[in-house]
Length: 553
Image (tube, rainbow, N blue to C red):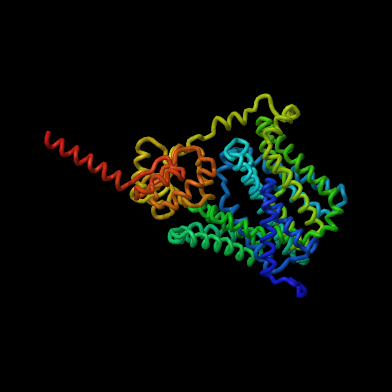
C-alpha cells in the first residue's frame, strides 16, 4: 500500500473479501472453480482496473501461508499406494504426459521466438494439471472411484511429485551465484535435501507420534499443531536455502504417516482455500492488461494445445498400454487445464529473476482459459465422448487387456456399517455388529480409543462426525448403515444433514438418552433411534423374567 492510498489496509481487505464473495457467487452459479473468480477479483480491484488495492506485504505474507498449506495438504494426502495399485499406468501416463507436453510446448515457444529460459518455464507450466479442481469435479460426479477416476488421481499424484522436483531445481539455480561452480551447487543441494529428509524421518520416528497422542484430543489444538508443523518445516527449508514450498510438502508427508491425516486434511481445507484467495487476488492485481492484450493470440494457441493436445497424449499412452478409448478419453480430460501450481512456479520464477512479468501474465491467461473451459468438458464428459467416439477408434486396441486385468483385480471389499463413537455403548455395538458377520468401520475423535480399538482387531479411524469434509473421505456411498452411538442431538443432526447433502441412500441410526427426542431425530433423517438405557432395561427385564421362570420350572 502506497502513501497516496486513501484506503487503509483493513478497508482494502474488507472490500477485497466483499468483492470476492460477489464474484465467487457468480462463478459458482456458472459452475466455475473459484480460482478463476479470485484472479478476476485481483484484476478488477487492482491497478489495471479500479485501483482500489495494491500488492502489499500483508497480502504477500498471507499468500505465502496459503501456498505453504497447499503443499502441506498435498504431502499429507500423498497416496503412493494408489500409484502401486494402478500399476504402471499412473507412472507411465503421468511421466509420459509431462515429457511430451513439455517437449511440444517448448518447441512451439522457440518457434515463436521466445527465449530459452522463458520457453522452459512455459513448457513446465503447461505440463501440470490441477489436482484440487479435478478431485472436486470427479467427487461431484461420483466418479472418484471409477477406473478412469482412479487412474487420473494416480497420474495427478505423479504430477504433484514432479512439481516439488521442479521447485527444488528452480530454488537451486535461483540461489546460484555467478562465481559458484555447478558441481559445488549440486553438492550443496544434495546436502540440504539430505538434511531435510533426515529431519522428516526423525520427526516421523520419534517426535510426531508422541506429540499427536496428546494434541489430538482437542480439534482446535490439532489444527493449530498441523499448521505449526507446516509453517515450521517451510521456515526451516527456507532457512537452509530451499523453498518454503518444499519444506511444507515434507511436513505434510511427515504427518501423512499418522492416523490423523484425514482429519487434519479435512480441517485444513477451508483454511488453505481462504489463504490461497490472497495469492490469486495478488496475482490478478499484478497483471498488466496492456501487455496481456498483446499475448492473447499466443495464449489461445497454448490453451488449444492444453485443451486438445494434453488429452490426446494421455489417450495415446493409455491406448498403447491396453485401455479402452472411453477410459483414456475420460482420464485424459483431467489434464485439459493447467494447475494452480503452474502459477506458483511462474511466481517463483519471477521472484528469482528467471522470467518477466509478461511471461507470468501469459501463463496466467492460459490458466484462466483452460480452467474455465475444461470445467465444462469434465462436467459433460460422457455426452462429449458419445459424440466423439467414432473419431477415437484409432486410440483403442482390439483387445484392451490392461483394462480388463485392472477391472478383474479391483478390490471391492468395503465396510457394511460405519459406527461413529467408540464409547462403552458404541464399542459393544461395533463389536457385536462385526461378530454378526458385518464389516464394520468405527470412527472416534479420541486417539487413545482409536488405539485400543485397533488393538482389539476393530477397524477404527480417527475423525470427527461433525466435519463434512472428513465424511467425504469415508466410503459413505458403499455402506448399508451409518450408526451414531453419540447421544448428543446437535452432533447427530449435523451428521444426518451432511450425509443427506451428499445423497446418502443407506439407513441412518441415531442414539439418544431421551425418549422425547426420538421423533425429532427421525424428522432429521434417521430411520432408527436407539435408547441405550431403555433398551438395556427392557433386556434386563426379559432376562430376569426368563431366569425366574427357569427357577420355578
